[in-house]
Length: 276
Image (tube, rainbow, N blue to C red; front, side, top):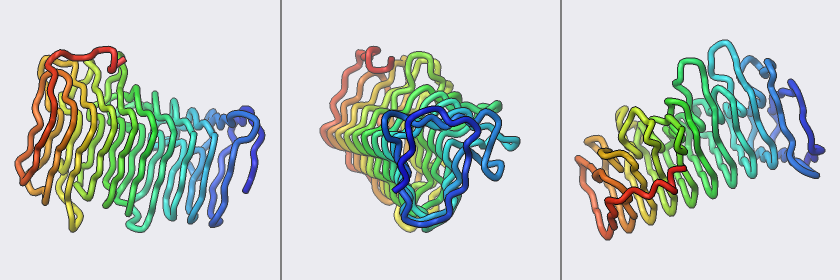
């Protein structure tokens, strides 16, 4: 366990390669302000370690020449992030495509991450073993997605993916290569400024995993546009279940594969208070 006193730490970047380390803010928040610095030209923290844990940190301002400057770049191993904030980076939290990597995120916030060409995401998980996101808040993306994951197994639970009235995110949630996706108990809402009318997308770039199943349950999905699609599933999914969701606004649940759609309740009156 490494305790770090609250405060601002400028250009304090690092590569972590030792297993079983926890770094924790004490006495308040620890703000890691990149201000031009980047570990290995990748981000504020680069992680190649198993069972690493980060608690109470803010990651701000990561920018690098290849425009993928991340608050944290997880390359191999396993990482648990709790009560952290990723803001004003080119990419919030970014992983490589390592099939054994595991990322867990609890009670954290991702917002205002933006790269010059706009193809950024608040959280981007590559083709890793597992992504878990619980009790977290994603908002104010710039053209890219609030959350994009290529992981084999995904659990997105009890979180808010709400772009905000002036956000310009594309998808709020995307699983471009399918996998197993459990999306339960979230509020997912797009902005009127989006260029993409879809909230959730599954399999748009081709299915890459042995099992490709989506379970969408007990979520509130909000579309403030006069048109839109709450869920878009590409042909070839093994199974889709959308059960007990609340659909607010206009739009459809679309799927071209086998699916179960039950007890999804609809209101065609957008609740704009949710999207703010």
